[in-house]
Amino acid sequence: MTLFAGRINRLEYFIGTVILFVMLFIPVTLSVVIRLLAGDLVSKTTSFLDQILLLLFYGYALVLFIINVSLEARRFHDLNYTGWLSILLYVPIIGWIYAVFLLFLPGKNQNNKYGKETRGMNIKKIFGFS
Image 1: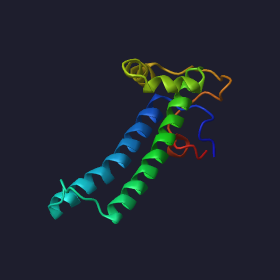
Image 2 (image 1 turned 30 degrees about the vertical axis):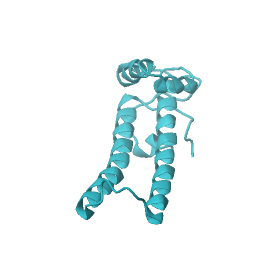
Image 3 (image 1 turned 90 degrees about the vertical axis):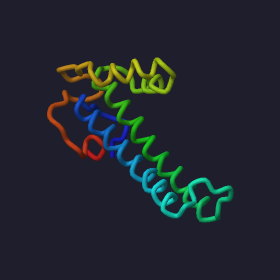
Image 4 (image 1 turned 135 degrees about the vertical axis):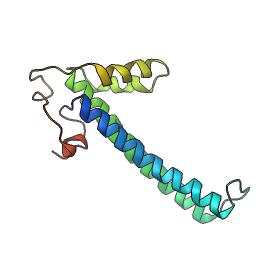
């Protein structure tokens, strides 16, 4: 598994980001809908089960965050920059500029120190399985 190694192109970065957003959006939406149906959206107390579910959700969100950082690092690799620049995406205002930069700037059309030229799309490669 090569979570932080290699390169991904613009399309793979975009699709990976959309998939991660949906994977985060679905559990949050389900939680709100279940709470609304139960009439318990603004409860003043939390049960033990609520606390366990919240802890599981935090773990799930952390896994998605790590995968997202790996997408960003590999996209920077495609541009022949170090993956450590992905930290800048979490700085207010500068992060939005870098996000647009990652989405629209084409990658290098030759091999670089981070891997071979990226062509086509591979879902396994997006999530670091090839």
